[in-house]
Length: 551
Image (cartoon, rainbow, N blue to C red; front, top):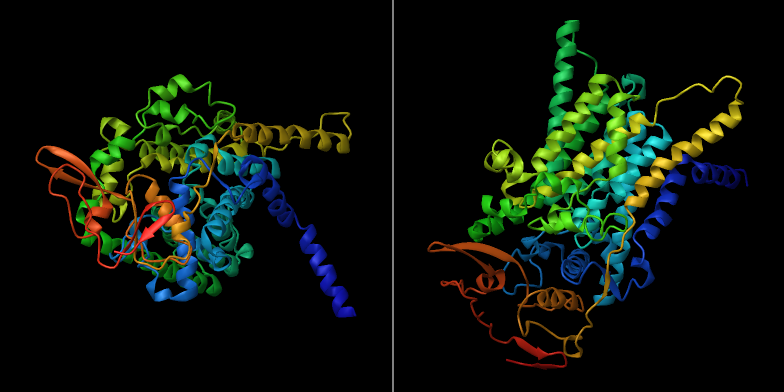
């Protein structure tokens, strides 16, 4: 009985712990701010039925492959008979364990909607944890978490789960800082070193990379820059003291294992993408593609139409943008105001505020793509030429996540300034009213994240495709219908000719975009008109929602 009592007391302490409460509070908050996603999780999808159906299939395929034949993971059932087709987009492989339970299109849609809610909660918790580790108070950390989880620009990405899945970035940084005993307010404290937290941070960082290189590649380079900064500080300390600073053995081993594991996971994830590029060099991103998605400066102050507070008010500004879906990048008016205030008064030292502001400006310059300086060189295009893998990123505006995170840290510093109670004021009354006042900024930030995102019905699976044995080709080909076919193929995952992607080629003086399916089927187009795919032998062809014939 004593053992049971001790276990019960331990569980009660965990349940009452501040971090447990933060995690639990983040879940209903995410459900509310993504509503009505959970009103009909089996029948609707947020934003549209384009990319969400593709990503529902991606997660489902990852779980199916891990459950049945992990060696076949890279070679999905789509774009038959081409290999390495799982690497035609960010794979979201890190979510594959969620797909070990449930089969078929309905399960895939429910799973996607649950993940859609959970990634918002994780972003809130990650940024909150990072700000607290850096030395911010609860109110400041809540603002950082709210802005990172629900910034207005994220509403434009409601159909891109891989872009919304950024919580691992902030959480990994929080764990690594905690493991190394470091914070902005107190610097390095050897007595606070926790090798286990450092190892966990590297594990979360590796998991973040498995969700896709669109977010993971810049994150890897940020970790590299932070590593160089730590090595530089270590070298300066050595030079000043004329003796080598002691590094805890456990921390050294945790970092060694963590860096090795992170690099190994990154290389394993990169291998199929490199193979795809080698097979289809026309799929490389170009400066012209980057320019198409590069936002002007006003884009960083413009909200998407899905924003409840700013959507209609910013309609005229959006009309001047070439590609609003990737150019409405407002991090939040309240957040920006608090960050500016944080430059003046803050818990952070002056040089730290300057460094954070410089990071914000650098992030915005890169997020502007070719719009920065007129051509993005020096800038984004410079990185495309010199950093391995950077030429695969065609949407620079998504780097605004780093500006949002740093703005949140600046704002958290402003709200962490502690003042003494006024003379004659009761200490209890002062703290009570102070907590109420400090909660207001977080509520205002959350108000900017309230959505009016459309939730559209999921296309019903045709009767002819239920339980069909592959290979199969569904007609007509074209547009997001192929994404729907990919979703329907989660019913048993038959080999499917259908699949959708874009590659670029030059024909004479014209730049022509072709559907990937043509080249995947061995009939690359030679003229600037859509090519007719060659149908492999023994392929079932479905031309209407309720008929299928053998071929």
